[in-house]
Image (cartoon, rainbow, N blue to C red; front, top):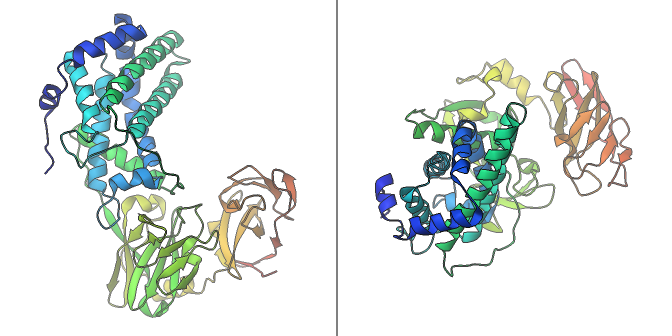
Length: 448
C-alpha cells in the first residue's frame, strides 16, 4: 500500500547529508544569494505559466508508450485521477523551487523526490527510469526560460538575463540531486513510435490539478451526445460523428456498441474508416491494427485509442464524452434530435460534406472509394486532392491552406490544390485531384 506523506514528513525522509551536498553543488556552479533573489523576483512569471508547462510536459509523456504506461489503469485506459495527483506534485515542486529559498529543508525535499522515483524509494511500485527524470529537468529548464523571455524581454531585460542565468544554475543542482539517488539503476531505452494525444484535454487536466493544489475544486463534467437511431446503424455498420476538432467512430459490432477516437496512434489517420475483419480494425493509412472492442493496438496492447461509453435509450444511440470535447459554440442536444434532423445526418455519404462546415481558408476530410480525400475552400470555391502527401504520406487535410496552396504538416511539401501540382519539395510527385460538385448545402467529391 502506498504511503502518503505530508511535506514535513517528506523533508524528514531526505538524506541527512542533503543540505550539505546541495550547498556544495550550489557553490560549485556559482549560485549566489543574488541569484536566489533573481529567481524570487521572477516567481510571479513562473507561477503564471506552471499549468501550461505541466500540461506540455504531460502531453509529451502521454505520447510515448514507454512513458504512457506509467499512467494506465489495469484495463489500459488513462488513470486520470492518478495523472491529476502527479500533476499536482509536479506543480508544487516547481512552485516551491521558484520561491528562491534553498535551505536544508528544501534540499531534503529534493533528495526525497529523487529517491521516491527509484526502486529503493518509499513505494517500490512507483519507479521512473533516470532518463525520464533527467528529461523532465531539461524540459522544465527550456519551458521556464521561454516563459521568462516572453514576459520580461520587453519589460525588464535585466531581470530576464539575471533570472534565466539563476534558473540555469539551479537546474544543474536539482539535476545532480535527483540523479545521485539512482546510484547504479540504469536501463536501456526501447525504441517506439509516438502516440497522438488530445492536447486540449491534457491542458484542462493540468489546469484542474493546479486549481486543486490551490484549494479550488472543479468537478469534471461529462455530456451525452446523440449519435442517431439504432435502426440507422444496423449490425456490422458504423457512423462517424464530429465534435469540434474530434472525430469519433461508433460501431455496431457483434450485437455490441463501441465508440473509438478516429485518430490512429501512429500518424493520426482516420482509423475508424478502415476495414473491420472480425474484431480487428485496420487503419487505412499505414495498416496499424486495433481491437475494435477495446481500442487496443494489437502490436502493443499497452497503447490504445481513446474509447467512449455507448448508451442506448428508447431506440436512440448516445455516447458519453468529457465536456472538453464539445465545442461550447456548437453544443449538441442531450436528448434525441427530431427525426427529420437525424435523417438529414444519415443522408450525408462518406464522399459528402456540409458546405457550412468548411468556411473559406479551411480544409476537411472525406472518403472516396475507400481513399481519404482532402477538401479545400479557396475563397468560396471548393477543390479536392488525395489527402496523402506523395513524399511521406502526411495528411494534407491537417496542413495549412494559404490561398490555393496547401502545406503538408509533416515535412513542408507544398501543392496547388486546384490541380495537385507540386509547388515546393521535398515532394516530387503531384497528388491526385478530384472534382467537387455543390448542391445547395451539400458538397460532393466525385470518384476519379
